[in-house]
Image 1 (cartoon, rainbow, N blue to C red):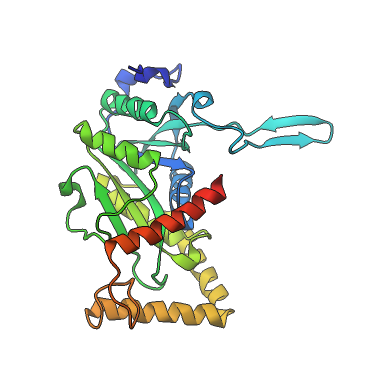
Image 2 (cartoon, rainbow, N blue to C red):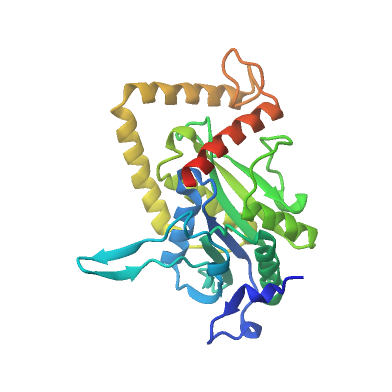
Length: 304
């Protein structure tokens, strides 16, 4: 059996027995993230607080460098710097001094089960109270209406009153989803949020999606996380989106159509689903899953 400690090491100045317990936010780059939801959230948290690296993973044994080559800067006659990939565990504190952890970096190409064992070991050693993650998925919804989400967890009590959008479907796996599954099997608490990003903004930076993710993490963990910079960025991003849509009549009409569809759903008349059109029947869970799988395959192809 793999020794879980072989894949990570604590920093030389860190005594793990003296680290304060708290929740852990996980953000692995590389899987679907419509609107840059996860990336914006992670960047915001690192910029808003004093992040201290407490542990790092052995990425040399986990990444396919030829599959996604790191950047080296060439300066006229020499190589000047190398943007070496890193999978790091940070410790931060919220506004009230509560410690929490952020595990972020490239999603490993290899040894997923070994990485899961290593993260599980960290969860136990540090007394992690909850592992939580968030990313964006594209949905046929307008940006002018409240942003929805699909919550998932190792225990129904963690989800609360949030209602599911999907039934039972097959989707491409990710290290984050496998980690949540295995933590649940180990009797540990983990959950995540798939933020519903308007499909026409899936390839753009959508700060309202990241702000929704931040608020969901706050609700789940009880952390008092800083949000000022993200609120400001979301407001500016909203104005830019409105400006661009105002300059494109075709896109504006499509958004108005989504608004009408959303409002009809909200009133509970004519059709029961955001995903059904005026004359459409409610798509089955299998149909939704097939469409979602098709989209994710295009994302995977683009990342390879």
